[in-house]
Amino acid sequence: MGQMIVLAVMILILALTGTALAQQESSKYPSRPITFINPVAAGASSDLAYRMICKEAEKFLGQPIVVVNKPGASFTVGIAAIASAKPDGYTIGYAGHPGMFVAPLTEKVPYHPVKDLREIMQFGIINIAVTVKGDSPFAYWKDIVAYARQNPKKLAYGSAGVGSFGHLALEQIARREKVQFAHIPFKGSPETQAALLGGHIQVGTGDFTYSLLESGQIKLVFLVAEKHSPYYPNTPILKDLGYDVPAPTFLNIAGPKGLPDEIVKKLDDAFSRAMKEPGFIKGMQDFRFTVLYRNGKELDEYVAANFDAFAKMLKEQGLIK
Image (cartoon, rainbow, N blue to C red; front, side, top):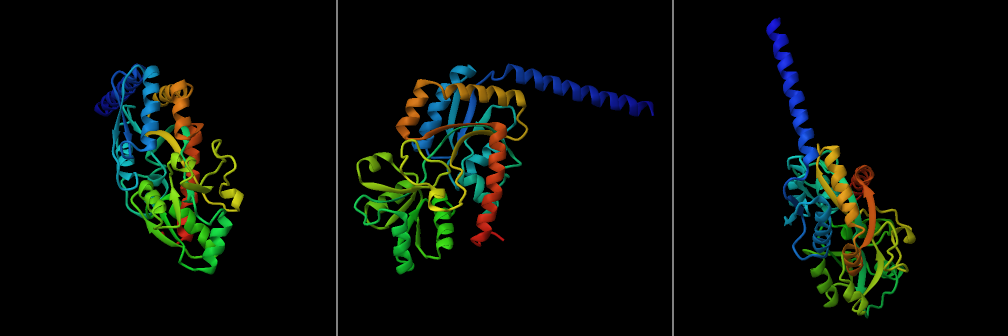
C-alpha cells in the first residue's frame, strides 16, 4: 500500500514538473526559428502572400520564419505535416481549403481538419472566380446557363482539378439548374487560364491572374465567394445568383491540435500586427486579395461549420456515401 502511495506521488510530481517545464518553454517562445509549411508551389500568388506576412510577423516575434513549400495532393501533403508536428509552435502553416473540405471527405488522409488542427488566425481571402475569354459572347451567368440548357454537355469548362472549389461549385449549380456541362480538369489555375485563352474551353474556374482581367483578355462572370470583393464590387457572388454554396476561400495560419493557448496568443498577436504594416497592406492590394481577420476561436468554428456543409454537398453530388 505504501509503495502505491509513493508511486502515485512520484507520478504527480513528474506530471507537475512536465507542466511547469511546458509553461516555462511557452513563456520563452519563440527562442529559435519557426518553420512555416505552405502546401502550394513556390511562386504562386498565395505563396507570395504568405512570404510577405511572415516577413512582417518576424519583426514582432523576434525570430525568423522559414517558409517551406510542400505542394501536392490538393494541399494534403502540407496539411498532414502541420497536423503531425509537435505542438510547440515551431511548425505552423497554411491549412487551405482544398485539403480541408474535400480530400478528407473523399479519400483517406492522415488527419482530420477539425480534430487534428488548431486554427490561429485568418488574415485574408483569395479570389476564386468563374471567367470567360475577353471576346466571349457570354456576358452574364444566365447566358451560360441558357446555352447549356439548349446544348447539353457542349459547354466545356475547366477547373483546377476534380474536387477543386470551382469544380464543386459548378457541379452543384448544374444540379440545381438541371443543366449539364462538360468538365475539363487541369492541374491548376494557370493551365485553366491558358486553355481559356487558347479557346479550348469556354468557361474557366479557379484563381485568376488579375493582369489578364485588367487587360481585357478575360472577363469575370461571378466570384465563388461569400462576400463582395472591394476590388470588383460590381461582380456578382454566389448569393446574388441565388445559390447557397459554401465558399471558404480563406488565408489562415494553423498549427497542430494541442498548441498551448499562450503560444497561440503570441502568434495571433504577431500576425495581427503584421496585417497593419504598410508592406503587407500594399502587397495584398497588389494581389487583389481581400484583408479579413478572424481569431482562432472564430476560425475553428468557421472551419467546423464548412466541413459539415461540404459533407452535405458532396453527399448530394454522390461523391461520398
